[in-house]
Length: 352
Image 1 (cartoon, rainbow, N blue to C red):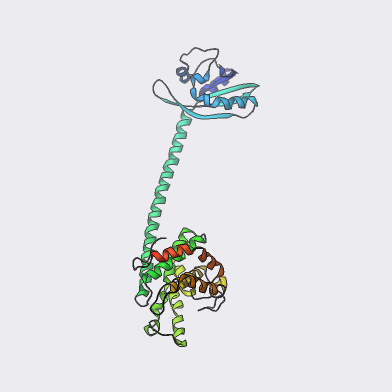
Image 2: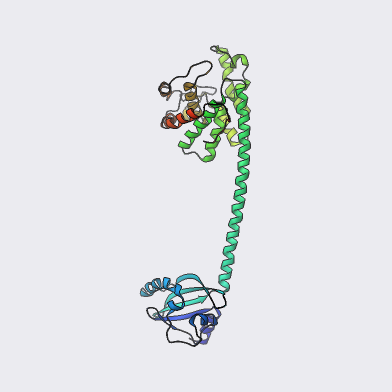
């Protein structure tokens, strides 16, 4: 090896070995660097070195290196770095590379030194950055949860307003939210959207707070004029809820406005047809009808689930979205469980 090349290798802490036979190497240098003397056990040059005895880690790499030399590839094959400890307890980061040069199998062993230290520092910075990012994400999640809890408190208070003026029970509005959330989940909605409709659906009748008691609480059938007054609860509710920056309240506004629209366009207040009706309102319409049919009210007795389902199926394509009704039918076991479990007054909002 000429002096210039030897100096370059020395400055890079690289030792060059020529493979002679499997596992046996000749040092292609006139002297051993200090860091290698410790591992070889002596400073004098030997005719051959069995590197796997010197560096046991290399036994994991040699099979790959032999295969690399067999194909005489011009590319370098790296072992990746490994750590050895010298007699003073210092950690040395080493890396081997297999090459085919001038029709000879060559193995370079490099003491990475400063290069390794810089790489460790770089990885530490990355790790610290990831930890910082994780802390920020955790803080964002905590703040988002607090915001969501405030939104739920607002929703609960809004829903409770109607219970003072209507015969609807807390259990009914709670079930409506859970039914709607179950359908949204089956439809593949995001977690946020599922939670939004869980909060929003119970507010479908919030506009009834603006309906006079003589109409809202009338025991008998409403006159045509009284029914026109009652129909206004959809627009009143929408006006109460619209313009909010809270997603659940925005959804509640569209549900309040459109939950009496019908698939065939015969509903109110806007006579929307089919998919012109927001899907949140179509879902709420289905679950509200189901719960009203199978539960007793002041003005009516409950009917059996089988009879209720038959009646709802007759509404498909006229009153109700036929495809969403099919989804509801598939979820009947879930709906039945919600109905059986939620039958008492209590917290209005419970995560499904």
